[in-house]
Image (cartoon, rainbow, N blue to C red):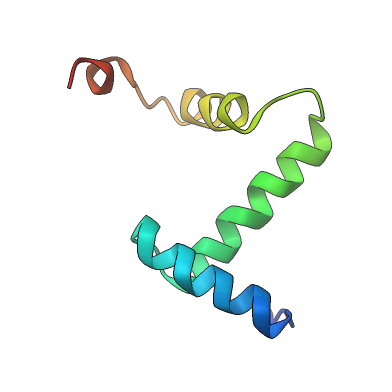
Length: 68
């Protein structure tokens, strides 16, 4: 674990987004970093495709969510 210096405006955006997504500020920043890393490694995939791929890797079934 380390310390990452980020711009104050970006930190504020992470704080606001974390409230909406029910995550801590650190968890929101970590999510953005992970998605960004995956997007750079897979430039042809959309955000939704990246998230779907991560759900599949984690063996999360979204079948029941569609029925709600």
